[in-house]
Length: 341
Image: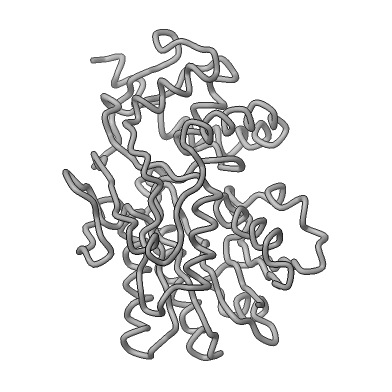
């Protein structure tokens, strides 16, 4: 199997590549990554010289870069490349349209023109929007409520349209909130853990009662590989961890795990604009295919905290420069508004 993995220097993409290298010894992997702020070569340092792995720097929206990565031919594309953070999508929505929709279109054109055998679009449960009760299923309508989720929904619809129009051999996975090692420290768990390890406060949005379902990155990567190899073409598969928690519960667990206190280290800040209250997905379709999450949530979270504690050399360089400017833009006014209340 010769794979083109896009966005393979990112959090979930790099976990997927490490999994394939470890468990599919005959696979060849080409990684196409634009090396944006979240694309970190250190995520694949252990395999960068493996003869089965090669790297091409470029954007998925650039047909020339995509053609270079495909080279003489590949068997499948797995598209992780995306702008992924809701908060950043509020600050700069256009960047999300370019990558998540137009970039996906460029890849689909390559699949159609080069007769590539399988294409898997890595998506998110956020495309279903806020779920007051019950669980979202694959056939449910999409109701995205942020620029990020709308761009991901747009990419999904492009994928399914190519299936209907051209018979393209496509698959879609929609994963729930993912956590684990190597996650860029803008997301809740790595941001809070690294702040707490530095004895800094953490910014908790609103009342903290927003509910997310948490999935370990190894389980997410394994689910994507399983769907790639066994999924029915044209189908969508939800990949949920089965671990619903409020953000407040997660915060309390992280504070305890870092030996800090809620009173001195948690700042309730003004809520995110249009913040979805609850996500929940039904993963029975993927489970019927033979996948299920393996990592116990409490054990996975404990090991994640320990990983960041023991890998300061990985995350500390990331929390400087661009990150500090983003953090200031994102949280300074919220903290002031909260204090004003």
